[in-house]
Image 1 (cartoon, rainbow, N blue to C red):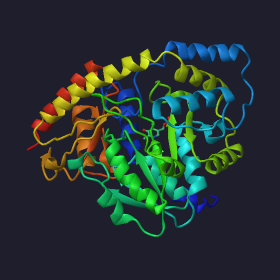
Image 2 (cartoon, helix red, strand yellow; image 1 turned 180 degrees about the vertical axis):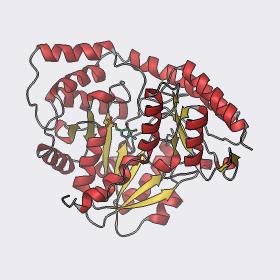
Image 3 (cartoon, helix red, strand yellow; image 1 turned 30 degrees about the horizontal axis):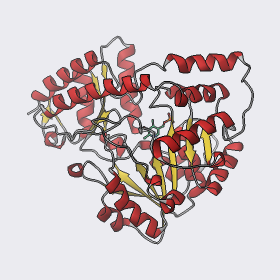
Image 4 (cartoon, rainbow, N blue to C red; image 1 turned 45 degrees about the vertical axis):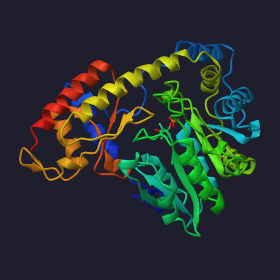
Length: 398
Ligand SMILES: *Cc1c(COP(=O)(O)O)cnc(C)c1O
């Protein structure tokens, strides 16, 4: 066997995958598993978006496009930033990639170098950690507290800043917690970050999925200084139920955007031409399907949250966005089920899958083993069934 590069051997396989693989195998074996592990909307891509892709195909838009995206799509993105976030960008500051995950990858590659410290508030989305390491960065993980909605406080931020701090990752609304930073909270963090010149990677992929009138604020919109320090990451996957189309985008200061596009020019080149045309329709077309999806997610969130908090031993705050709950299960640590001691959320997830046929993602995947992630990207009927099963099983665990 040939030697693998250290870069490759340093990557941890996703800890969510083993439970996911097991759940899938159980389904394939004909078992009725309720899957709360899902990380994508369960809705289909709206028709007018699909139609735009069909038209693009028929019109022969099947060739290379400019590396950083078509002029048409970049114009739609520029307009989106202006209208939704009050942010003014030139088209040359926009880079369209094969999904927001790819945008993040490009950003870390061009901004982070060997030995740079990158502040990563936990719980965090799994890929940040690996992408930081791939870029040679040193992840500085800050554990946030459930009591304030898992949001990084200015004090926590100050406590980890060093001369080597180069970047910070913010993700609001958050996967896995659903937490949304308020304007005031971002202003407080922004003041410190601007003072230290820390570059901000702001992952806003769940921007549109907010509830109860929660306001999404982009930290880049809090003044010219912060805009100069921020790379905003967004995409169509979550808002428009387009995960399979692979279109994400970044807005960044000119030199950063150029470096990201240059890097991309030697790896993937442009993202799919047809998916770019569909994304124009997503951003500029009717937003009613999105509003419909948000109403349905809101209804499910309310129901699931009530069920979770009615279970003795579980507690979960009210998330303002995304489509996840991240309940604390630490009251179950040390309890037993069928002779097996529960040591953390990983053990609980295993028991839930094997004995209740419900798949959840253990929090260890996100850097927090006292919680687990429940996705409500499932039909109301399945949510009712899954919550019944969880409640029944946990009531037997004394
Ligand atoms: C889903 C997700 C992404 C990636 O989205 P794609 O555009 O499908 O690559 C990025 N960040 C977070 C937090 C996500 O949950």
